[in-house]
Amino acid sequence: QVQLVESGGGLVQAGGSLRLSCAASGNFFSIDVMGWYRQAPGKQRELVARITRGSSTNYADSVKGRFTISRDNAKNTVYLQMNSLKPEDTAVYYCNVDRVRTSGKYLEVWGQGTLVTVSS
Image 1 (tube, rainbow, N blue to C red):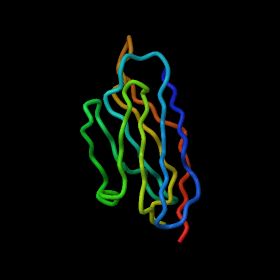
Image 2 (cartoon, rainbow, N blue to C red):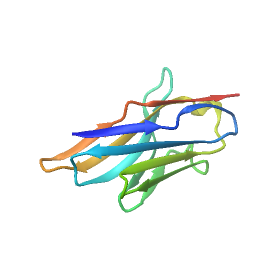
Image 3 (cartoon, rainbow, N blue to C red):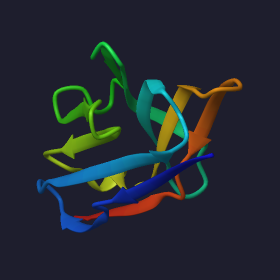
Image 4 (cartoon, helix red, strand yellow):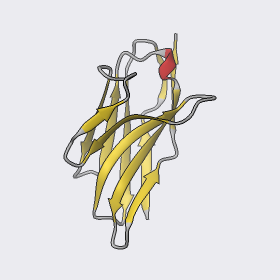
């Protein structure tokens, strides 16, 4: 089993910053990909950013230059630093870990989500 604990969401004014964290724990050997997705009201869930174990990253065009994803492999934790936030960034942000290597098989796991609200 793999558990994800997210933190860092909240209410912020436009132009402000927030940092999301997601820590993975449980019985696994390694995590290949860690990322963040978001879902705004009435919209589909979309990729925000993800990072591989080797630190290769990719971002949604809408957040490039404003958000930075990073990870600490020793702590099995992924971070999302969000700067210059806009009201359109308001959404529930979900942590995702993919290709989690366990003794049996590879897993994909989702966090419970953390709400980010950006006021104008």
